[in-house]
Amino acid sequence: MSVPPVPVPDNLRWIPATEGDETEYLEVAFGDDGNVYLRENLKPEEVVVTTNAKWDAFVLGVKAGEFDHFVEGLDDPAPQG
Image (cartoon, rainbow, N blue to C red; front, side):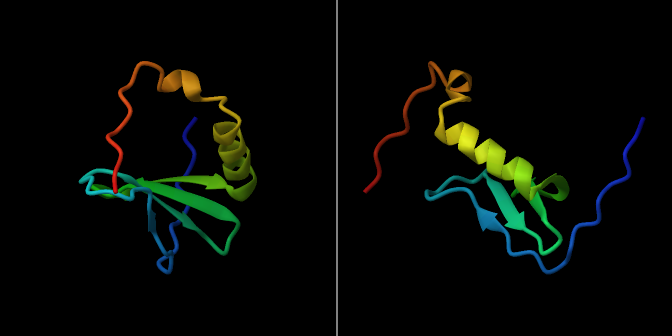
């Protein structure tokens, strides 16, 4: 079963999820419609949409360490500054 795509508002303010010189990163935008929009900066036409409530639950899970197992064994990035 296919779900029709949610229209992406034109007036979104995309926030890059990077503080460094990365060439590839995610961007997030919060719509007035109660949705959160995610995309890769190199593929801006491909947008994932979720609700504010699901986004908040995800962020709380990240803060609580629920997803730490996905990054186990990865090298820590070099400190910047």
